[in-house]
Amino acid sequence: MYSLYLHIPFCLSKCWYCDFNSYPGLSALYDSYTEALATEISFWARTLRLTRYAGENSSAVLDTIYLGGGTPSLLGFRRISRLLDACRSFELKTDAEITIEANPGTVDSTLLRALKRAGVNRLSLGVQSLDDTMLSRLGRLHSAAEARRAYELARQAGFANVSVDLIYGLPEQDLQHWASTLEEVLALEPEHLSLYALTLEEGTPMEADAAAGRLNLPDQDQSADMYSLAEYVLDRTGYEHYEISNWARHGYQCRHNLTYWRNRPYLGCGAGAHSSFPGLRFHNRMIPADYIAEVRRAGRDPALPPGGATPRILATPEEVASLPWVERVDFLTEQESLAETIILGLRLREGVDLNLLAEQLQSDPTAFDDRYRDLVAAGLLWYDNGRIGLTARGRLLGNEVFIRFLPPARAPKM
Image 1 (tube, helix red, strand yellow):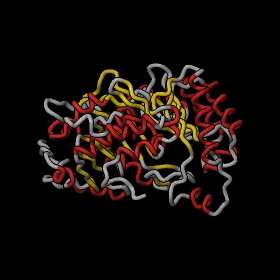
Image 2 (cartoon, rainbow, N blue to C red):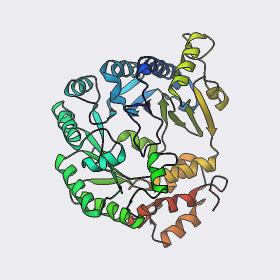
Image 3 (spheres, one colour):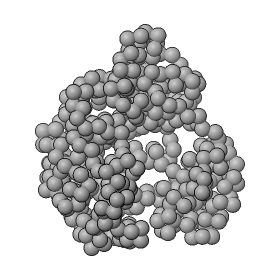
Image 4 (cartoon, rainbow, N blue to C red):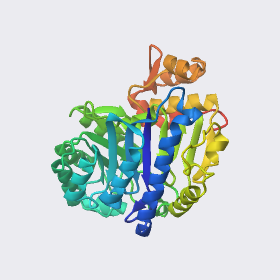
Protein backbone atom coordinates (compact mmCIF):
# COMPACT_ATOMS: atom_id res chain seq x y z
CA MET A 1 0.00 0.00 0.00
CA TYR A 2 1.43 3.36 -1.02
CA SER A 3 0.76 7.06 -1.11
CA LEU A 4 1.48 8.96 -4.32
CA TYR A 5 2.54 12.60 -4.38
CA LEU A 6 2.48 14.60 -7.62
CA HIS A 7 4.43 17.84 -7.62
CA ILE A 8 3.12 20.71 -9.76
CA PRO A 9 5.90 23.33 -9.64
CA PHE A 10 4.01 26.24 -11.20
CA CYS A 11 2.59 29.37 -9.58
CA LEU A 12 1.38 32.79 -10.69
CA SER A 13 3.95 34.57 -8.52
CA LYS A 14 6.41 33.63 -5.78
CA CYS A 15 5.12 34.49 -2.31
CA TRP A 16 7.65 36.45 -0.29
CA TYR A 17 8.09 33.75 2.35
CA CYS A 18 8.17 30.74 0.00
CA ASP A 19 11.21 28.55 -0.66
CA PHE A 20 9.27 25.63 -2.18
CA ASN A 21 10.29 24.21 -5.54
CA SER A 22 7.90 26.44 -7.48
CA TYR A 23 8.27 28.83 -10.42
CA PRO A 24 6.16 31.65 -11.86
CA GLY A 25 6.07 32.49 -15.55
CA LEU A 26 6.38 28.95 -16.93
CA SER A 27 2.91 28.51 -18.44
CA ALA A 28 4.54 27.48 -21.74
CA LEU A 29 5.66 24.26 -20.00
CA TYR A 30 2.25 23.22 -18.68
CA ASP A 31 1.50 20.76 -21.50
CA SER A 32 4.96 19.22 -21.78
CA TYR A 33 5.27 18.93 -18.00
CA THR A 34 1.90 17.21 -17.75
CA GLU A 35 2.98 14.62 -20.32
CA ALA A 36 6.34 14.04 -18.63
CA LEU A 37 4.66 13.61 -15.26
CA ALA A 38 2.08 11.21 -16.71
CA THR A 39 4.96 9.20 -18.23
CA GLU A 40 6.74 8.93 -14.88
CA ILE A 41 3.51 7.90 -13.13
CA SER A 42 2.91 5.17 -15.69
CA PHE A 43 6.48 3.92 -15.36
CA TRP A 44 6.16 3.50 -11.62
CA ALA A 45 2.77 1.83 -11.98
CA ARG A 46 4.49 -0.87 -14.05
CA THR A 47 7.68 -1.01 -12.00
CA LEU A 48 6.97 -0.35 -8.34
CA ARG A 49 5.69 -3.81 -7.47
CA LEU A 50 8.85 -5.30 -9.01
CA THR A 51 11.30 -3.37 -6.83
CA ARG A 52 12.75 -4.99 -3.76
CA TYR A 53 11.61 -1.92 -1.83
CA ALA A 54 7.97 -2.84 -2.32
CA GLY A 55 8.26 -5.75 0.08
CA GLU A 56 7.35 -9.36 -0.50
CA ASN A 57 3.97 -10.06 -2.09
CA SER A 58 3.30 -6.35 -2.33
CA SER A 59 1.09 -4.82 -4.98
CA ALA A 60 1.14 -1.26 -6.23
CA VAL A 61 -2.11 -0.23 -4.55
CA LEU A 62 -2.60 3.46 -3.83
CA ASP A 63 -4.25 4.55 -0.60
CA THR A 64 -3.86 8.28 -1.28
CA ILE A 65 -2.99 10.66 -4.12
CA TYR A 66 -1.94 14.24 -3.39
CA LEU A 67 -1.42 16.96 -5.99
CA GLY A 68 0.74 19.65 -4.39
CA GLY A 69 2.91 22.51 -5.46
CA GLY A 70 3.17 25.21 -6.46
CA THR A 71 -0.42 25.72 -7.43
CA PRO A 72 -1.80 22.52 -9.02
CA SER A 73 -5.12 24.17 -9.88
CA LEU A 74 -3.28 26.34 -12.44
CA LEU A 75 -3.03 23.35 -14.78
CA GLY A 76 -6.77 23.39 -15.43
CA PHE A 77 -9.07 20.41 -15.63
CA ARG A 78 -7.85 18.91 -18.92
CA ARG A 79 -4.28 18.47 -17.69
CA ILE A 80 -5.30 17.42 -14.18
CA SER A 81 -7.63 14.82 -15.70
CA ARG A 82 -4.71 13.51 -17.76
CA LEU A 83 -2.69 13.02 -14.58
CA LEU A 84 -5.55 11.34 -12.73
CA ASP A 85 -6.01 8.97 -15.67
CA ALA A 86 -2.31 8.08 -15.45
CA CYS A 87 -2.71 7.42 -11.72
CA ARG A 88 -5.32 4.81 -12.56
CA SER A 89 -2.50 2.76 -14.04
CA PHE A 90 -2.11 1.83 -10.39
CA GLU A 91 -4.75 -0.04 -8.47
CA LEU A 92 -6.64 2.45 -6.30
CA LYS A 93 -8.36 1.60 -3.06
CA THR A 94 -12.09 2.02 -3.42
CA ASP A 95 -12.01 4.77 -0.77
CA ALA A 96 -8.71 6.33 -1.89
CA GLU A 97 -8.16 9.85 -0.59
CA ILE A 98 -7.43 12.17 -3.56
CA THR A 99 -6.38 15.69 -2.59
CA ILE A 100 -5.58 18.76 -4.67
CA GLU A 101 -4.09 21.99 -3.37
CA ALA A 102 -5.56 25.21 -4.70
CA ASN A 103 -5.06 28.89 -4.08
CA PRO A 104 -8.13 31.12 -3.90
CA GLY A 105 -8.42 33.04 -7.14
CA THR A 106 -7.27 30.07 -9.24
CA VAL A 107 -10.51 28.09 -8.98
CA ASP A 108 -14.03 28.62 -10.21
CA SER A 109 -17.27 26.67 -10.05
CA THR A 110 -16.64 24.89 -13.36
CA LEU A 111 -13.20 23.62 -12.36
CA LEU A 112 -14.26 22.54 -8.89
CA ARG A 113 -17.29 20.63 -10.14
CA ALA A 114 -15.19 18.92 -12.81
CA LEU A 115 -12.55 17.92 -10.27
CA LYS A 116 -15.19 16.48 -7.98
CA ARG A 117 -16.67 14.43 -10.82
CA ALA A 118 -13.18 13.19 -11.76
CA GLY A 119 -12.70 11.66 -8.31
CA VAL A 120 -10.93 14.39 -6.32
CA ASN A 121 -12.53 14.15 -2.89
CA ARG A 122 -10.40 16.45 -0.75
CA LEU A 123 -9.55 20.11 -1.34
CA SER A 124 -6.75 21.96 0.45
CA LEU A 125 -7.15 25.76 0.21
CA GLY A 126 -4.12 27.97 0.76
CA VAL A 127 -6.00 30.77 2.52
CA GLN A 128 -3.13 31.81 4.88
CA SER A 129 -5.06 34.83 6.22
CA LEU A 130 -8.47 36.47 5.99
CA ASP A 131 -7.01 39.97 6.26
CA ASP A 132 -6.14 41.79 3.02
CA THR A 133 -3.29 43.72 4.66
CA MET A 134 -1.71 40.52 5.95
CA LEU A 135 -2.14 38.82 2.59
CA SER A 136 -0.37 41.73 0.91
CA ARG A 137 2.52 41.49 3.38
CA LEU A 138 2.90 37.82 2.45
CA GLY A 139 2.90 38.55 -1.27
CA ARG A 140 -0.31 36.59 -1.80
CA LEU A 141 -2.33 37.45 -4.90
CA HIS A 142 -5.80 36.62 -3.61
CA SER A 143 -8.00 38.72 -1.35
CA ALA A 144 -9.87 37.66 1.76
CA ALA A 145 -13.12 37.91 -0.20
CA GLU A 146 -11.74 35.55 -2.86
CA ALA A 147 -10.74 33.08 -0.15
CA ARG A 148 -14.25 33.06 1.29
CA ARG A 149 -15.72 32.74 -2.19
CA ALA A 150 -13.43 29.81 -3.09
CA TYR A 151 -14.54 28.01 0.05
CA GLU A 152 -18.20 28.64 -0.78
CA LEU A 153 -17.72 27.38 -4.35
CA ALA A 154 -16.04 24.22 -3.04
CA ARG A 155 -19.06 23.47 -0.90
CA GLN A 156 -21.43 24.15 -3.79
CA ALA A 157 -19.36 21.78 -5.95
CA GLY A 158 -19.97 19.00 -3.44
CA PHE A 159 -16.65 18.88 -1.55
CA ALA A 160 -17.36 17.44 1.88
CA ASN A 161 -13.72 17.41 2.93
CA VAL A 162 -12.08 20.84 2.81
CA SER A 163 -8.83 21.80 4.53
CA VAL A 164 -7.78 25.40 5.16
CA ASP A 165 -4.15 26.52 5.60
CA LEU A 166 -3.36 29.51 7.82
CA ILE A 167 -0.11 31.21 8.84
CA TYR A 168 0.41 32.93 12.19
CA GLY A 169 3.23 35.06 13.57
CA LEU A 170 2.77 37.51 10.69
CA PRO A 171 4.26 41.03 10.55
CA GLU A 172 2.31 43.38 12.86
CA GLN A 173 0.07 40.51 14.02
CA ASP A 174 -0.97 40.34 17.66
CA LEU A 175 -2.91 37.79 19.70
CA GLN A 176 -6.22 39.59 19.24
CA HIS A 177 -5.84 39.60 15.45
CA TRP A 178 -5.03 35.88 15.46
CA ALA A 179 -8.04 35.16 17.67
CA SER A 180 -10.26 37.01 15.17
CA THR A 181 -8.77 34.99 12.30
CA LEU A 182 -9.53 31.73 14.07
CA GLU A 183 -13.08 32.88 14.79
CA GLU A 184 -13.68 33.76 11.13
CA VAL A 185 -12.27 30.48 9.83
CA LEU A 186 -14.18 28.39 12.33
CA ALA A 187 -17.39 30.06 11.17
CA LEU A 188 -16.75 28.40 7.78
CA GLU A 189 -16.65 24.98 9.47
CA PRO A 190 -13.84 23.30 7.49
CA GLU A 191 -13.14 19.64 8.18
CA HIS A 192 -9.41 20.21 8.55
CA LEU A 193 -7.06 23.04 9.54
CA SER A 194 -3.31 23.36 9.05
CA LEU A 195 -1.75 26.17 11.08
CA TYR A 196 1.88 27.10 10.49
CA ALA A 197 4.14 29.64 12.15
CA LEU A 198 5.74 32.02 9.68
CA THR A 199 9.26 30.77 8.97
CA LEU A 200 11.87 33.06 7.46
CA GLU A 201 13.60 30.83 4.94
CA GLU A 202 17.06 31.79 3.74
CA GLY A 203 17.05 33.59 0.40
CA THR A 204 13.42 34.69 0.49
CA PRO A 205 12.39 38.38 0.30
CA MET A 206 10.84 38.23 3.78
CA GLU A 207 14.05 36.88 5.27
CA ALA A 208 15.97 39.75 3.65
CA ASP A 209 13.47 42.31 4.94
CA ALA A 210 13.68 40.88 8.46
CA ALA A 211 17.48 40.92 8.39
CA ALA A 212 17.39 44.58 7.32
CA GLY A 213 15.00 45.47 10.14
CA ARG A 214 12.11 46.26 7.81
CA LEU A 215 9.66 43.81 9.43
CA ASN A 216 7.97 44.06 12.81
CA LEU A 217 7.50 40.39 13.64
CA PRO A 218 6.06 38.86 16.82
CA ASP A 219 8.76 37.40 19.04
CA GLN A 220 8.97 33.70 19.91
CA ASP A 221 6.89 34.10 23.06
CA GLN A 222 4.13 35.88 21.15
CA SER A 223 4.11 33.20 18.46
CA ALA A 224 3.98 30.53 21.15
CA ASP A 225 0.98 32.30 22.67
CA MET A 226 -0.75 32.22 19.27
CA TYR A 227 -0.11 28.50 18.98
CA SER A 228 -1.41 27.87 22.49
CA LEU A 229 -4.50 29.95 21.75
CA ALA A 230 -5.19 27.83 18.66
CA GLU A 231 -4.88 24.66 20.76
CA TYR A 232 -7.33 26.06 23.33
CA VAL A 233 -9.91 27.34 20.84
CA LEU A 234 -9.88 24.37 18.48
CA ASP A 235 -10.04 21.83 21.29
CA ARG A 236 -13.25 23.47 22.47
CA THR A 237 -14.83 23.53 19.03
CA GLY A 238 -14.54 19.84 18.25
CA TYR A 239 -11.22 19.63 16.40
CA GLU A 240 -8.72 16.89 17.19
CA HIS A 241 -5.13 18.10 17.42
CA TYR A 242 -3.66 15.02 15.79
CA GLU A 243 -0.31 16.46 14.63
CA ILE A 244 1.80 19.42 15.75
CA SER A 245 0.42 21.76 13.07
CA ASN A 246 -2.80 19.98 12.08
CA TRP A 247 -6.32 19.70 13.46
CA ALA A 248 -9.30 17.76 12.08
CA ARG A 249 -12.89 16.87 12.76
CA HIS A 250 -13.28 13.23 13.74
CA GLY A 251 -12.56 11.02 10.73
CA TYR A 252 -11.02 13.80 8.61
CA GLN A 253 -7.33 13.49 9.40
CA CYS A 254 -5.23 13.80 6.25
CA ARG A 255 -4.44 10.19 5.38
CA HIS A 256 -1.76 11.22 2.91
CA ASN A 257 0.22 13.21 5.45
CA LEU A 258 -0.19 10.45 8.03
CA THR A 259 1.82 8.30 5.61
CA TYR A 260 4.74 10.72 6.04
CA TRP A 261 4.48 11.02 9.81
CA ARG A 262 4.18 7.27 10.28
CA ASN A 263 7.19 6.85 7.97
CA ARG A 264 5.39 4.52 5.59
CA PRO A 265 6.36 4.11 1.91
CA TYR A 266 5.42 6.87 -0.49
CA LEU A 267 6.27 7.69 -4.08
CA GLY A 268 6.82 11.21 -5.37
CA CYS A 269 6.57 12.05 -9.08
CA GLY A 270 7.42 15.34 -10.74
CA ALA A 271 10.18 17.94 -10.53
CA GLY A 272 11.86 17.85 -7.12
CA ALA A 273 9.44 15.24 -5.75
CA HIS A 274 10.74 13.02 -2.95
CA SER A 275 10.16 9.30 -2.48
CA SER A 276 10.66 7.12 0.59
CA PHE A 277 11.01 3.36 0.88
CA PRO A 278 12.52 1.32 3.72
CA GLY A 279 16.16 2.37 3.94
CA LEU A 280 15.99 4.42 0.75
CA ARG A 281 15.22 8.05 -0.05
CA PHE A 282 15.48 9.74 -3.43
CA HIS A 283 14.31 12.86 -5.19
CA ASN A 284 13.89 14.02 -8.76
CA ARG A 285 15.60 16.80 -10.66
CA MET A 286 14.40 20.15 -9.39
CA ILE A 287 14.19 22.33 -12.52
CA PRO A 288 11.00 21.60 -14.51
CA ALA A 289 12.67 21.91 -17.93
CA ASP A 290 15.46 19.52 -16.87
CA TYR A 291 12.94 17.04 -15.51
CA ILE A 292 10.92 17.14 -18.74
CA ALA A 293 14.04 16.66 -20.86
CA GLU A 294 15.23 13.63 -18.86
CA VAL A 295 11.85 11.90 -18.90
CA ARG A 296 11.66 12.48 -22.66
CA ARG A 297 15.17 11.10 -23.11
CA ALA A 298 14.23 7.98 -21.20
CA GLY A 299 11.13 7.53 -23.33
CA ARG A 300 13.12 7.69 -26.57
CA ASP A 301 15.67 5.08 -25.47
CA PRO A 302 14.19 1.54 -25.25
CA ALA A 303 17.04 0.54 -22.94
CA LEU A 304 15.79 3.00 -20.32
CA PRO A 305 12.83 2.39 -18.01
CA PRO A 306 9.77 4.02 -19.67
CA GLY A 307 10.36 2.21 -22.95
CA GLY A 308 9.50 -1.41 -23.63
CA ALA A 309 6.80 -3.71 -22.29
CA THR A 310 8.89 -5.28 -19.51
CA PRO A 311 10.40 -2.85 -17.01
CA ARG A 312 13.55 -3.94 -15.26
CA ILE A 313 13.67 -4.75 -11.58
CA LEU A 314 15.18 -2.00 -9.43
CA ALA A 315 17.04 -3.94 -6.78
CA THR A 316 19.75 -1.52 -5.61
CA PRO A 317 20.08 2.19 -4.84
CA GLU A 318 22.44 2.42 -7.80
CA GLU A 319 19.73 1.17 -10.15
CA VAL A 320 17.26 3.71 -8.77
CA ALA A 321 19.92 6.40 -9.20
CA SER A 322 20.30 5.40 -12.86
CA LEU A 323 16.81 6.64 -13.65
CA PRO A 324 17.52 9.74 -15.78
CA TRP A 325 15.13 12.05 -13.92
CA VAL A 326 16.38 11.09 -10.44
CA GLU A 327 18.82 13.61 -9.00
CA ARG A 328 19.86 12.09 -5.69
CA VAL A 329 19.57 8.80 -3.80
CA ASP A 330 20.32 8.34 -0.10
CA PHE A 331 20.65 4.97 1.59
CA LEU A 332 19.75 5.13 5.31
CA THR A 333 21.44 3.06 7.96
CA GLU A 334 19.33 1.15 10.48
CA GLN A 335 20.15 3.79 13.10
CA GLU A 336 19.10 6.61 10.79
CA SER A 337 15.85 4.86 9.85
CA LEU A 338 15.02 4.31 13.52
CA ALA A 339 15.74 7.94 14.42
CA GLU A 340 13.73 9.23 11.47
CA THR A 341 10.73 7.09 12.38
CA ILE A 342 10.81 8.34 15.99
CA ILE A 343 11.18 12.00 15.01
CA LEU A 344 8.36 11.85 12.49
CA GLY A 345 6.13 9.85 14.83
CA LEU A 346 6.61 12.30 17.67
CA ARG A 347 4.87 14.93 15.57
CA LEU A 348 1.66 12.95 16.05
CA ARG A 349 -0.52 13.26 19.13
CA GLU A 350 -0.62 9.45 19.31
CA GLY A 351 3.16 9.40 19.74
CA VAL A 352 5.43 6.42 19.06
CA ASP A 353 5.04 2.83 20.26
CA LEU A 354 8.66 1.90 20.98
CA ASN A 355 7.98 -1.83 21.28
CA LEU A 356 6.12 -1.99 17.96
CA LEU A 357 8.82 0.12 16.35
CA ALA A 358 11.54 -2.23 17.55
CA GLU A 359 9.60 -5.17 16.14
CA GLN A 360 9.00 -3.53 12.76
CA LEU A 361 12.57 -2.28 12.31
CA GLN A 362 14.17 -5.21 14.13
CA SER A 363 16.06 -2.74 16.29
CA ASP A 364 16.98 -2.54 19.96
CA PRO A 365 14.02 -1.00 21.84
CA THR A 366 16.37 0.34 24.53
CA ALA A 367 18.54 2.28 22.06
CA PHE A 368 17.02 5.63 23.02
CA ASP A 369 16.13 4.92 26.65
CA ASP A 370 18.49 7.52 28.10
CA ARG A 371 17.32 10.20 25.67
CA TYR A 372 13.59 9.86 26.15
CA ARG A 373 13.92 9.43 29.92
CA ASP A 374 15.78 12.75 30.15
CA LEU A 375 13.09 14.39 28.02
CA VAL A 376 10.31 12.91 30.17
CA ALA A 377 12.06 14.28 33.26
CA ALA A 378 12.27 17.69 31.57
CA GLY A 379 8.52 17.66 30.90
CA LEU A 380 8.92 17.59 27.11
CA LEU A 381 7.77 13.98 26.56
CA TRP A 382 5.19 11.76 28.18
CA TYR A 383 5.73 8.03 28.62
CA ASP A 384 2.94 5.46 28.90
CA ASN A 385 3.50 1.70 28.76
CA GLY A 386 6.19 1.76 26.07
CA ARG A 387 4.74 4.69 24.12
CA ILE A 388 6.22 8.20 24.05
CA GLY A 389 4.82 11.50 22.80
CA LEU A 390 5.23 15.25 23.05
CA THR A 391 3.68 17.07 25.98
CA ALA A 392 2.03 20.47 25.47
CA ARG A 393 5.36 22.10 26.36
CA GLY A 394 7.17 19.66 24.08
CA ARG A 395 5.02 20.72 21.12
CA LEU A 396 6.26 24.28 21.64
CA LEU A 397 9.88 23.07 21.76
CA GLY A 398 9.65 20.25 19.25
CA ASN A 399 12.98 20.90 17.53
CA GLU A 400 14.81 20.70 20.86
CA VAL A 401 13.27 17.26 21.33
CA PHE A 402 13.88 15.99 17.82
CA ILE A 403 17.57 16.89 17.82
CA ARG A 404 18.12 14.50 20.72
CA PHE A 405 17.18 11.54 18.53
CA LEU A 406 19.43 12.38 15.57
CA PRO A 407 22.35 9.98 15.01
CA PRO A 408 25.65 11.67 15.98
CA ALA A 409 26.88 11.88 12.37
CA ARG A 410 23.80 13.85 11.33
CA ALA A 411 23.42 16.07 14.37
CA PRO A 412 24.36 19.70 13.64
CA LYS A 413 27.45 21.08 15.35
CA MET A 414 26.54 23.27 18.29
